[in-house]
Image (cartoon, rainbow, N blue to C red; front, side, top):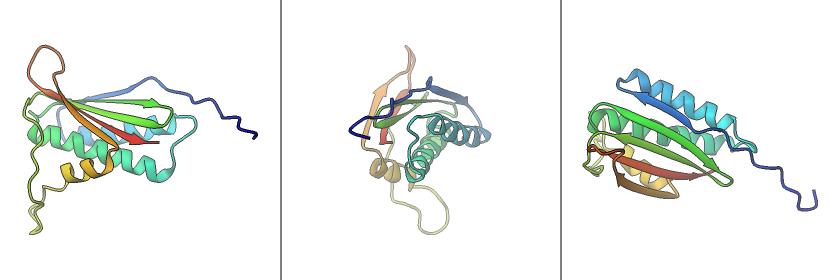
Length: 138
């Protein structure tokens, strides 16, 4: 195509608020719909990775972040940003994965490995809490 590039189309940010385990499914569906609306669309491996990071961050927000979360998805030409806010100001804590079947300890390790860039900021808003930003390649 002689160096011509299809114009990237950036949809409106996808936002989900949740306070129950049922919200995890909604967050994953929103991530799939959001990535499916991008032009050019990310490959299936990138979509699966984005959905996994969304699932892990939302699950951790419910379990360890005060029981409520806000997920916001946004895109740039080469990346997707997953931002999950919760009401607990404490940063995520690494722990040894439970290999005896009790569950837990894997999510934060996975998110750290999969994200191209990861940061934690105070907030949102004037109250306590934090927002975790994970930037993933498209």
